[in-house]
Length: 332
Image 1 (cartoon, rainbow, N blue to C red):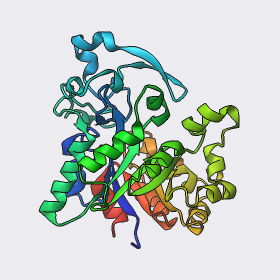
Image 2 (spheres, rainbow, N blue to C red; image 1 turned 180 degrees about the vertical axis):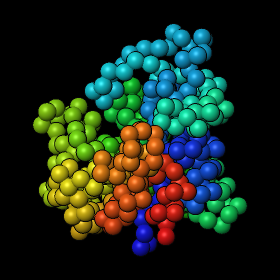
Image 3 (cartoon, rainbow, N blue to C red; image 1 turned 30 degrees about the horizontal axis):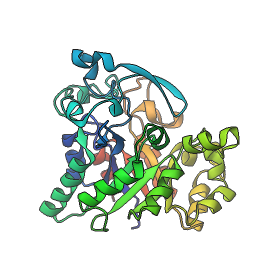
């Protein structure tokens, strides 16, 4: 494909609350090549679609008096968080909650749809994409992001095994549909490979910091994300994963890319690694300073120029929050 894949990041969260059925359906109807769910787990081992395992900011759980006692504080990937956590609820309990816009001040139009839809399981989304493919003749894929694998493993979840079983049950393990599995942690990607799970494995890379799994096992000596995209780091990834997914700043701001901007994409390609980037958003709040217009964080800046720079870098896939705009810019 001469253009990058357009991936509906959590559906179409620029317009509707992320990870809802209507948000995913809007993304599919807009013509994306794939949609991206984030996966955590319920107490009874159901793969649940949420941005994080802390669900207080994206559901109405805080307004449910029957769940007030579940509010707690945990340390997740080195960060102390207070709220409500998916792994402390059964799926039956989670299914009663309703979804809310995560960024209401930036996206008030989306927030008007708060409390209208329930949470989804991974199986619900896989079935939705399968049904969409059958009814339209198109074959969109899924980019499945595994969240907090080390933390959840310590909590007693067989993350790789549960995902493998879910994909098999939904008929998504045999290559019938395009599938990518990504994580900020290499360990779970290795375990998924060992379990024989199909699809392409993508290592998510932050502009700063180090992977949580390696930090836990190796401490301060853990290789940082920046070191993983150095020439030596990319050499180590070759054959271990199928690609990397870079914070867009590492491409657009050469100082953040070890080899500098587009050359970082080329360095990965030279090692047979595909390259995704995240997240293309039009609001000033998310654009590089040179592409912002005015002072309102929620206003749209010169996103088309920024996105054109991403396309020109040679990336293979771009995550977007506004699928119609993504298809218009990247899909030509």
